[in-house]
Length: 352
Image (cartoon, rainbow, N blue to C red):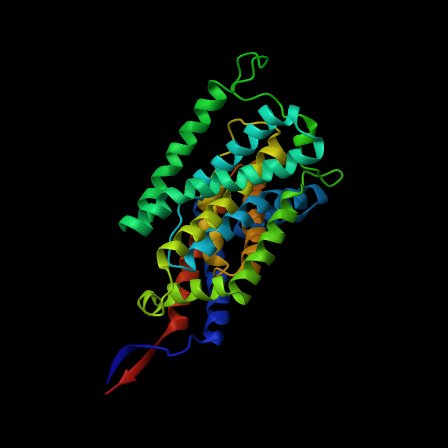
């Protein structure tokens, strides 16, 4: 008798749910071990993180604020992954979306009717992020260039361009030498909920998730994307134009990340400055995979990851422990979830 690995014809849903539950428990156990090595009581530390994330209306609202860009970046990763494209450039596409929206707010808003400013900023953010993503999309579709490398490298180009703008030509002349553009006019501010920083970007994220779910599940475009992702050879045989779909998917993917950048500059900072590129695009990759590339799952996971980030900050303030504990939990959770996904597709059997 020997132990063999056998692929399941149909992934086991029971194994999926059991595996994900065990993965979460193992991730918190691993995080507890890290906390113990740091000299802290794991249960007390987790209690502080929970209190920091959900202990008050202000803290809970901050979780939602951090979840908004994670939702949009997670959706950007998911739509590209459906066609087997690995978009690692969400950070740069978010930055370009912020730059596009800031350009409208700074230079066009004084000449526009107030009701048109925010719609044009939203369109500019979407187009800027989408066109930035089209560069690696074109290279992949036409020249078979690996999109992982091109999207990753373009992140640094976008961040350097952002810094050039707010340190140089777009710097506020009345800013006393500090880097950053002038404050946007109030017509370019996203409305917030009273007494919180939750802004209309949340509505953008929810609508994007609904539209993406409908498009992927109930349209010909979504069906052809699924066919390409599951079997490119069969899709080509069926006459589906793969290159064209890659370009459209990258436009939508980059556009979603660009909307996240627009929401950050218009709903949080009210200007273009340092702090726009803080890693939401990279964390969106984790969110997309933990949400199993499903729009509904991405919304839930975004809130959970945002809670870890906000709780990690509270851990640093109260117990003087590094806030990176939240990042440790993110990484271990992703590791164990991927392992559980493998077990849902394969099973161990004994053979003679």
